[in-house]
Length: 148
Image 1 (cartoon, helix red, strand yellow):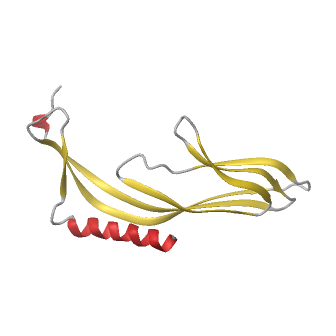
Image 2: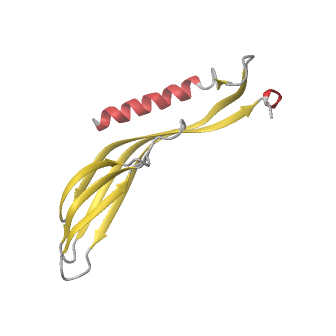
Image 3: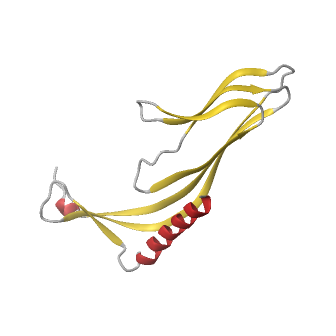
């Protein structure tokens, strides 16, 4: 599954890089103007990579920690300039229930582990791995078409 996601992400990035010199500007239609385009953008660079988010909680005490809960926020895709695909979620050390995925009415999303127990001088570690596709964009505005 991970190799397939990497292949699709790399293929899309290569496509963007190959066709950039042929057609570097993509038009965005104006909502207020029926006569044409007032905003263009140019993809300057494309980044393809992997992001690993690691959270580690260590119990330095001589008694176990019991009944803990860990909420880790997820990266959201809120712009057209970056895409993050969660491809792996893992946890080790201690005992726990989960993970479960939570979505709140605020729009925030989390991964949750509950009933976490960490023994003395041990650690509980969580890893989230994302595949990232990100674009650096330069905007070109036709100021003569802007209205106040």
